Image (cartoon, rainbow, N blue to C red; front, top):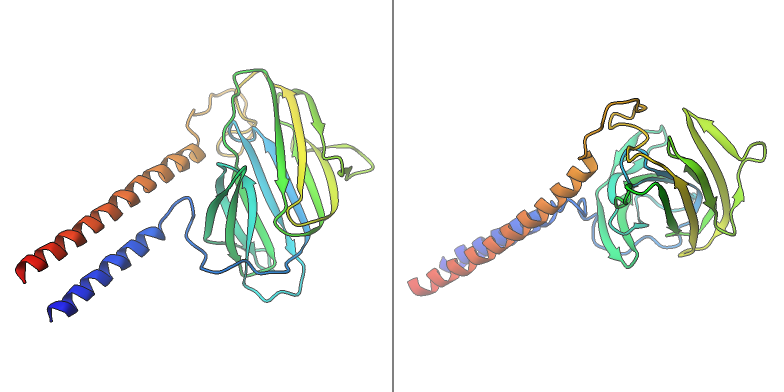
Length: 275
């Protein structure tokens, strides 16, 4: 009887540890064990690069559709800049509904690999890169896109921050301007420049360099996604709050796991002394 109780208690401890591991904020929750589905190709993909949109970082959006032929759900992954904070990891139904997915983030050198399951061919991934210094008027950075699968057509949409000047883009050498009629389009007050890449191979990097002048540290829009006029915005964005929550959960999970291990050791010692 003592042995049965011991086994039951130990099973409960490990079950609690497993459930706690699934609450990791950074990894979302593990989408399951196993390798990514092989031989997947993306038919079309759009990459939106919006610097200083709603915070002093780059808001990036990856959306597109895998080519038909695979059995769904599939397991796939996307490479994002190291330290990025994921906002949405979704699969889109055929009617256009967003279904948020659990995801797992694994560091891969200069990138983080975001793994998830997709019940439909369409995907939508949005995130913010680590924040950068906005105290200097001259700003420049390099954005690298690393493809996780072969891509037939990739469109890159780059948005100029409001109140910025001397905006300059050095596109990837393989990129071509997507709109022949006009290089720059104006959408909702923002200037957009689009490029197109074709027949991208798996693991290929596409590099875009951006530079511009901007005298103020404010993002283009406030936290409610409306154009800013005069009021100061809070210095703490919800994405910064998400980073802080993630750190707190790390500490909480680590402390809880240590406490469970200590409790198990104490239990076995007391059982041994009782025998």
